[in-house]
Length: 240
Ligand SMILES: N[C@@H](CCC(=O)N[C@@H](CS)C(=O)NCC(=O)O)C(=O)O
Image (cartoon, protein in one colour):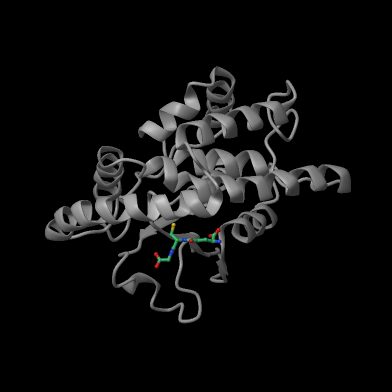
């Protein structure tokens, strides 16, 4: 059986998992989850978030980073996660950094109503929604998220989302220390996680701010070149 990824196409955590699957060249199926009734993941009574991964033998794995590690072991060719203790410490440090980065992202995606509308336009396009939900979620979601973004900004101590993003891009580039990838000559788990998170804002104003850093943009292109084509996002199983 083909492994299955239960996802919201636009979710950064789901993008992390798609990235490692594409890096490994795995033939996988994406199941777009309806964000309101979540009926596609009814089988998962204890864990109600996405991504959920069901591997080729039918085993369920939850939570993006554990899923990435599981996939790395399931498909050992083109190993991703660091093998040595020293490399692992560095990789873990940057995986932890990526968790902070992803938490701050909504402050940049939803900082103004036009930006929030731009994002919900994308979310409702690729996500699983009926036509009426597309319209109502776009409007109410965009409005609500601008408020949520302000709350997150306060919690995370982010005063200016643009500066938050450009700082993140600069920190990441510094961590490369002139090497093509954080993992050295090939990407490690942190490279693929950060790439996946960043991909979720590709095409949005937040993504453009990250790419203003030419070295960050060049790193992103280097990773992209190593990936097999994206399954047609949002148009996969279950999306009409
Ligand atoms: N730590 C989890 C976080 C996953 C997460 O927060 N997913 C969001 C979507 S972006 C979710 O499913 N939230 C619950 C909901 O939509 O009801 C991971 O890395 O996979």
